Image (tube, rainbow, N blue to C red; front, side, top):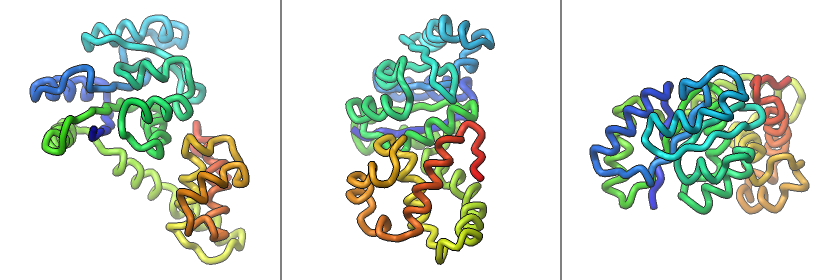
Length: 238
């Protein structure tokens, strides 16, 4: 089943997009909605959000909702199978399992869902039944102001690229190979490798990056990605 992810600058824009999706026959059961807790209009305290945001959001959307606290992200409110599956767990680890069961959304995108939520944005993940419907949904979400995960991934990397090139140059790690370095950096963000050093993650790395992982710059990128992940609430890596 094709899965389309879209990120909105505001919860209101995402809710308007959901209304448009209903107009073309996309039922609630095929929509996952994730938003920072304060975007649901609840009191600005973690305790109040944890108690009430799910009910508030459910009332707004006419759907069942869950609220959960995620370290580094704070309170998150969600609707849908993925939201229900990750309630009470860490987004990267538990959402990865939920994605595997419920949709074909790539697990390598999960870090970028986190980034969007950290920035106060709202995510819609929609299951389409076939290719024609996928095209209609994608076009409608874009028309409603949604941005694809791919565009956010590109923007995120462009914001880091010059700094990372300089890091490699100053530390004498050899020639800058952006593709291999970026592959290593992003490999460290994947739920399958989080909290692991290179040797612990070797099976996954060698399976998914059989060529790049043989280069020094890939391993340097992987170590930098681990540092970035550890400090990603501020985005600062030195």
